[in-house]
Image (cartoon, rainbow, N blue to C red; front, side):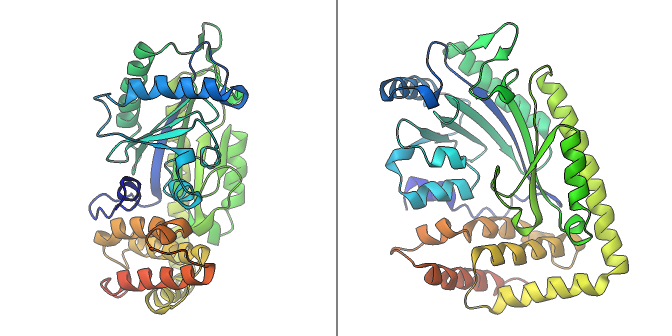
Length: 352
């Protein structure tokens, strides 16, 4: 198995997300002083920036066995798989020259080279522990700042390609599973409220994507004029409020529309267990209901980590990479259903 596949196909059965919270991320945008932003740089400048970044970060003791992948050396399927695993952005996956991705061995840290900015430093968690994320990414940011000449202005802060990132260059984001708000029809009101408060709500794979499986990403929109702690604190408060509303919606559904809840979850369980062909969007929708079943206590908590992994491993490019030959869409759907059936051979029956 290739180094990339080892990172992508993780089957840890102990590291699981929380109810409602799928994952959290802090991202810092940084640029090297004296070099043009990637979108305006020449191939020579991009190469030089990449060399500087690699030389500083490959030997960094703060990163656990980091691996670097040149984007232009990856196939289209491998690039898409990295997006599916939320390790790199769609924009980076489309890069044709000079871009790379560094991933720590435990997938807790990933750094994009020459995306929109020279460096996009990312720290991940499967909970809301922003403190540990900030301490980890802050220490890495300090290391980078002492090792490279980072573009910074005393008045504006860190200089970035996009004006909305100027200042701290920080984006905090949380991926939430919100089927209660979706089914009760409250999700649009929640999204509108988030936008008025200065937050962005996106779909499963970020900007311009849909919220498959009732999964939404919420992140701060502005970075200028606020400290990193201010951004994290405001995001945390907003997320706690959304979680509280989702919990109320779920309780209302179980009390007032319990047959709808049982029917949706039961149908999904049957289709996942017995289907012989299934598309990726359909799979995510049904697996979303299994995640809800665990949160309601209809399935044991021990299966949460396995379902988390499965929701990534059934994505189109992951299905393709797991096979030795090129698959058509129909063949991928058949293979996906087989992978899911195999998982559901061991999962216990629902207990309503």
